Image (cartoon, rainbow, N blue to C red):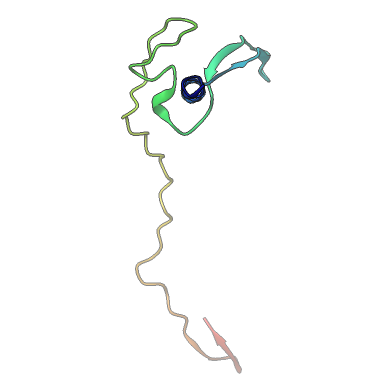
Length: 102
């Protein structure tokens, strides 16, 4: 009894570690058909995907090719606007009988 419970717990843990799902085929907005396929359950772990180096897709036999250690490219941000080094200071005074700043 104790042995079967332990075996069942090990299977549940192993099943969760290698969980996958089937994505049915669909049409994109541009009319292209994407064929249905199996994929690993989405999560934030880059090491348990079929496409990661060292892994093999059990459905196609294809070896993983993505380097999990590669750093993502940094996005190119637009240049900040440039301003004059010393902004013009307004000169205030009475002009034509009215106090104003120019």
